[in-house]
Length: 396
Image 1 (tube, rainbow, N blue to C red):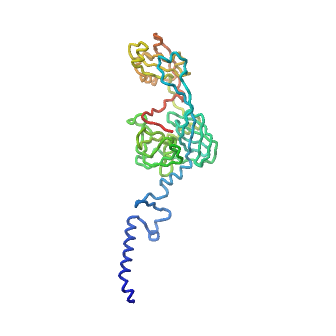
Image 2: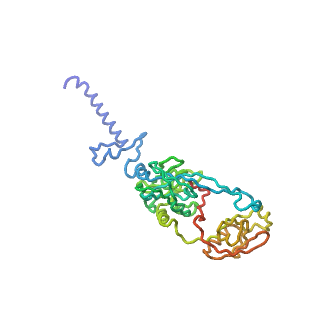
């Protein structure tokens, strides 16, 4: 060994040890392994994304990225133009001087929502409120191609609808099993919030069995904190395997991270009925066909009523009530000899009866009491009670 090598040997050994020590610390922190020393690890097929010293999830099966890649091509944007009829708030004391419908006016309203392909021959699942009253309906695919859509059937009770476009060989989603979900499970929402196509958000299942009508009551909805906004409605809620486990439906106004989705197991059955029959067949619901208005002090004084018992009715066209002779502004005092004090009293009585059953209704009209016999009909689908959303706001 020459003199120069002996002179610099200590420095070379120090540098080598320093390099080995640094590599060991780096490996301990970042988990980087040599695939040759660990044959079970493939650093090419499972790259780790690093940012600010943290490790993200592996890019591969079971990741948010892969779930989005699998489902996004099946998600569509739905644009609608609806015509709605509005009636200004006019006191009943003035309405009697004008013919029915005099104060009504119509206006066009544009809406936008999401949906997803459930069959390769052009069947799309979405929310009923997305397509409600739609006169025209445009469906935009993931590729950007646009189609005219038509509503195959709707079910307001579950807020589900099926839309059809004339197309084949479309990428249909894979449906999961919503009965196997658990709170805390990761989920992904995909849709078109505020027109931003192919938007992906992630979160967890916050709770199961929720009700929009009453937070304290048991229901069937999935609660999630995945960010959803107007335009997400009708889009899929997906697990990390890329299977659809719910349909995004509603959010709570002014809340953060409280959204709701319809379980896919329920949607499967409803969608099948809508495709095959155009509607969902359920036991017939008795229908009187009136809107109910509570009597306040002003109304009681105008009609010269001794008290506020009874309810004012607004009669629906072609309803059992109209056919029996009831009119707008009639005050219902009794139903089947049971006194009526509030609108709920009427609802409770009718719900206990059957379609085709005849009832006696005592009304006060033009200063006189009259009795009408009404044969209850079957509630048509378009008159099915919409889910109460206050303070919950469904969104398009």
